[in-house]
Length: 236
Image 1 (spheres, rainbow, N blue to C red):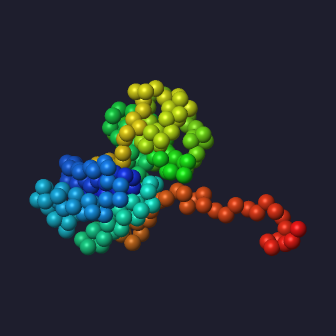
Image 2 (cartoon, one colour):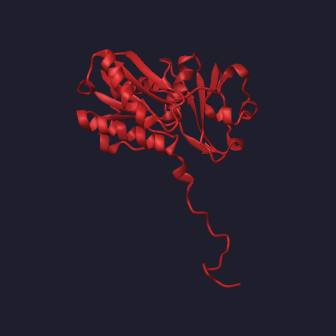
Image 3 (cartoon, rainbow, N blue to C red):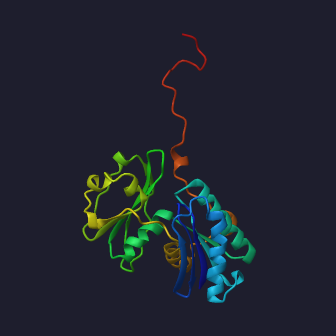
């Protein structure tokens, strides 16, 4: 099975190529506002190094968020364009799960992924790791740092991501030691590819037009109720 994976939901820009279990990837960590000029070049370089062309792909995987709105839209649009061009499905992968997979690869049994969401908030998810060292599916949250609370299970644990760098007080709040934290970790297409390959085997893929982004912030951007019971425009 062959797939291309893209991850552009944060300041990093990356692409990966999975060919029957073998992985190649390219990561540009400081790529804010440069994703558009980098991502297709990364794809072309990976395919050229492997002696492949896009038409030989079985699927295109993409980090579907949460993360930066512009980056998510760009990555999804490129993934859909590639998939339409070669008539293959798209596999959307949680950006938080992809970040957490790095912790699974490092031996953690439970991983907390946290991304700085700006506006004083954090995207986060607590994910368990199975016996195959793959993270499972877990609820994703958008919270102010003071409202983040987790119930740790027994066993090795790790917290990863820019949310820790933006709010270092979370380390004490969550009861973490210095060796259980990696605030510099960034989501990468390598882990998107790993999770997408497993999803493909399970038949969890979509036609390109059905792939959707996940922003999380949209879920809470609802009008607040008017505390004044009088009709709008009523005089005093």
